[in-house]
Image 1 (cartoon, one colour):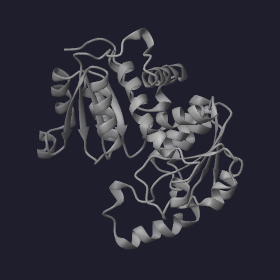
Image 2: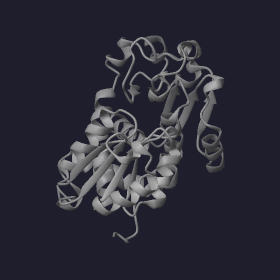
Image 3: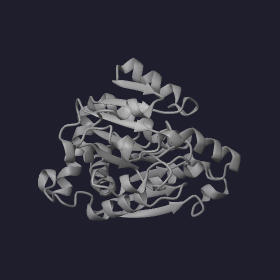
Image 4: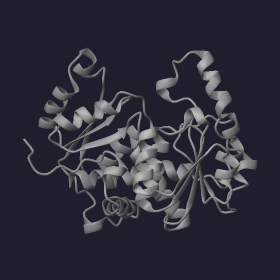
Length: 310
């Protein structure tokens, strides 16, 4: 059984800026094929268990490719592949996987599931996504902005749309990386009160708005996400229509993007629904950085894996 101090990657608010910077530096070095310390395969002989309670493209492929490029192996599990689908507790699953593997990544509908996994695991745990946060994604986004526009400190990032789990991780990032975050959200879809209270306590540079024009004007980066998340796809049609009506004014189109700085970039964590949260002319246009952003999930997650497991 592993007894050394564990390095979990759970949320940006519980990690120090220096640690997050170290992870970004490692990711950038892996991307440049000049790994810090010179070891291109620091995780040789290591195994990552990945549990998916939600479908995934980028999270699954980037983590699986990443661990293999670092010399390790991946075991990929859905809740139907394990006894979780038949009622075994997350705690018991954590205890067992800790005996077989060197780290566990979980992508789940409920943050409580991640917390239970952490309580019982004796290996590092990585937050691949919960209903409350998506830190791996926002780390890749920070990397992308810095590749395009230099140090993110002092920059202005505008979020327009649902104040969801990705928005929450942007709020955490605003404090940790010292940039200004403007969030334009409909009143009923504001970010969770707990994350807003954390931002206020920590003195994060956050503006919470309802006007997307005010949020985007003069911004260095414009960010949005889907209007209906995977865990909401089964909701009644009238509820979906209500969300669409609330969010329609927050669509990123050429007019809205034109209010940002001339060299501003557009980001979207994907999958995107062209014509809903963003128009095709924006996501496929010259200011879009979404494909670099998607690629950077691989590189930053290699940094996360190396930091957690090396």
